[in-house]
Image 1 (cartoon, rainbow, N blue to C red):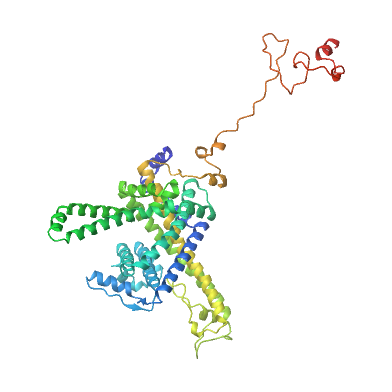
Image 2 (tube, rainbow, N blue to C red):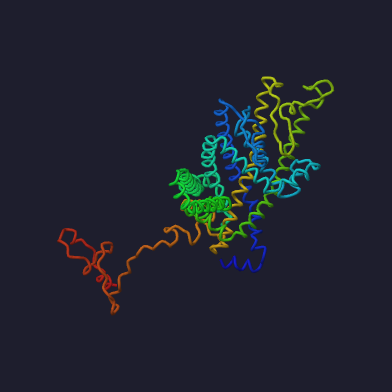
Length: 507
C-alpha cells in the first residue's frame, strides 16, 4: 500500500486514472492459455446455438431481418408480429449482436470503422447517429427480442451459455489476476481447474443472485397487481400497499443498475479473492457504487483501448489471410491450365474453394453446388482452418474483456479498500507449481517455518570437572564400571576388557 501511495504521488493523475495498469491489458489478453480457453468457449457456444437451432427449425425459423423489424417497431411504438422464415434463431441473433459489437468498437474510435471495412463515403452517415450508446441499446434490444418472443429458447440458451462462460471466463480471470498481481503465468489446465472448482459455488452462482432477487421482486409485484384487480377489497388494499410496489420497483432498478455496472466484476472477485458467490456479489455491487466516477473513467479508457487494439488485430488477421490467399491462389492458376470461369473470366481454384470478403467478412462459404464431390474435402478443411483463425481473433476480444474486468476490479479494490494491487489469493497446489514459489506471507504452514532440528543429547560431563552434573545412563554409550546397571554374572564377564580407569593408570 505504501508503494502504491508513493507511485500515486510521483505520477499524479496518470496513476489516479489507472492508465498504466489498464495498458497492461493487451499483454494479459494475448496469453496463449487465455486465447485457447476463449476459443473453446466460443466453439461450445456455437455448438449449443446450432443444436437449439436444429431443434427449433423442425417446426419453423425466423426471418433474417426479424430483430431489425422488432427494433423499428419499438422505436415507432408499433405492433410487432413475429414472421416465420428459413433462418435459425441463434443465427439471426448472433449476426445482430456481431454487428452491434463491431459498431460499438467502431463508434468508440472514429478511425476504427473505416479501418475495419466500412466504406469511407458511408462512414459519416452511418456513425453520426450510431454512437456507442446507440449500438449498446441495439444489443439490449436483441436480448429483449430473444427473451420476449422465444422465451423457452432464451432460457435454455442462457443457462447453457452461462455455464460455458462461467467456467471459461472464470479461468481467464484467474490467469489474468495472478499474472497482473504477481507477474506469473498459470497454464490452461490450472486456469480451467480453478474455474471448475469455483464454478457452481462462485462463478455460476454470482450473477444468478441479483437475477434471483429481481425474479422474486417481479413475482411479488405481479401478485400485488393481481390483488388490485379484486373489486372493492383490491382497491382498498392495493391502494394502501402501492407504496410497497414503488419500493419493489426501486429494488429492481438498483439491482439492474448494479448488474449492468458491476456484473463484469463478479467473476474477477471470485478469481482474485478466492471467495464465494455472495462475497463476489457484494464486492461487485459495492465497489462501483462507492466509486462511480472512477468506474466510468476506467470503463471509458478500457473501451477506447480495446477499440484501438481490435483495429490492429482485425487488420492484421485480414492482411495475413489476404497474403496467404493471394500466394496460394497464384499457385492454383499460374498459367491458366485450371480455370472454372466462363469466357474471358479467370477464376483460380482457391477462389472457388474460399471466396474472400472484406475485413468484417473474412470467410464466405463457397458455392457448394458448383463444386465437384472431391472438392468438398479441401473446401471443408480450408474453411475449418480459416474459421479457427477468425475464432482466435474473437477469442482475443473475449480475453481482453475478462482481463480488463480483472484489472478494473483490482483498481477499484485499491481505491475503496486500500488493498495492494499485488494481493491475490493463491491456493496450495498453485504455490507448488508457480515458478516463483509461495509468497512469504502466503506460504504453507509446513514451508513457512524452518524445519526444527533434531535434538541431540549433550555430551557426557567430565568427571574430573568440579560442579559438573552427572548425565543419565544411555543404552548407546559404551559400557563401563560405575555407569552401567548391575548385570547377572556370566562367563563373558571374566573375559571383558579392562576398564578405562585401569588403562589410564597404566599409561
